Image (cartoon, rainbow, N blue to C red; front, side):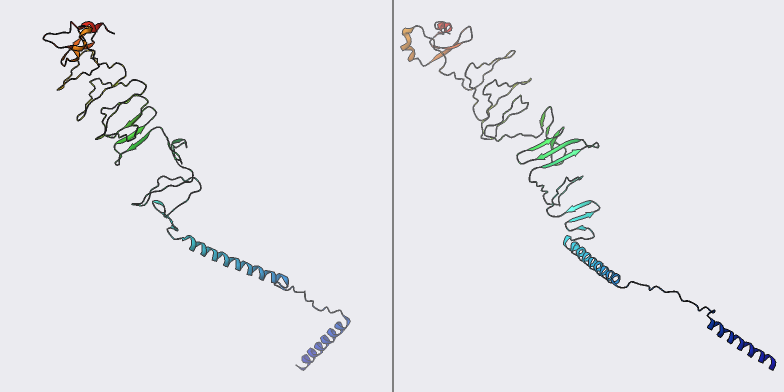
Length: 312
């Protein structure tokens, strides 16, 4: 035990002496420590980062404030925006709306018991197109006129069953029971008019006139002119002709009067003074159909005064 212990002590001393000698001779190498780089931002980079984050925070706050202001001013809600409401049936606008570009819709309807007003500084144009985009109908309301361009224009009754007025390229049809013309000059027609009845208003005169041409009334079963509470007057500048090709001309009245324009037949020129006192005449007719008056006597005097038939 003592010998081993002494050996260990000697070995330890030899090791310490050897370490001291090597250290002094410089053969023993000291361990080296590598340089450690600092982690993080320092200096102007750190200041720039803080400035950028502050600026970004300010911009976010300003955007949030503007968003809240726009929502409040425009009245954004779950149903829509202010006067504009979106629902399952479509879009509903309250108040006055202005459209700067064309508006494409299927139906425009006003509120119940409220009128629909469409305004424009120039004109209002409504177009209808087919599936190919071709224009099939157009309604233009301008400052001076209202124009409709279509194949057929119709005005129907309230229930939509009766056509009151229709126009196409060939004709104009009026389906009302009465057509009333209230102008001071009446109605002017460039061509023929077909109607079953022409009647003036109560206490008004009915006048049919053709200033420069002929006025013709035709009907396959007859033409009836009736004045229920007044007189019927026919005036012309030249001949007034009553003609019946197959029937007769029938005059039925309490009294039939022929004016003073009928020529007066006399026996001789010397009997003019006597004829002035004559108050009763008989109506005579010449072979050519000319009528004249002859002084009435106990017998017919038409033959004695037939010289009137020789006059032009």
